[in-house]
Length: 100
Image (cartoon, rainbow, N blue to C red):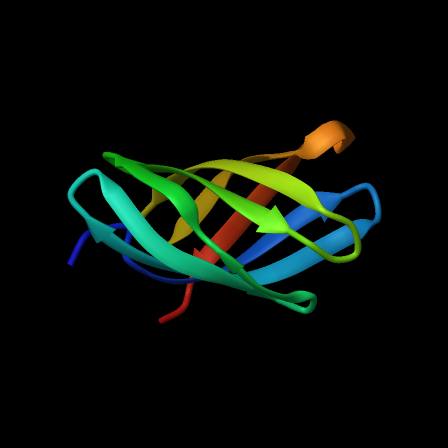
């Protein structure tokens, strides 16, 4: 098992408030698969990349409006911090903790 594998409880601080999601990460080499479960539904992880303790991926949000989300996070043991580019809505901080 990779040190990035697991289920992560994430929070994105958007202009409309905190958005929580459960992210699953299954790494294989320098790539990973998974999904983000949100109140608006499940989002597939696309283009998942692993670079040491750094992850990057893209997810397509459909509700409340279509938007491409581009994540970049760094993992430190059981926490993650990073950013997400939210289409034309700028960049927001994202953080998370691994479920134990």
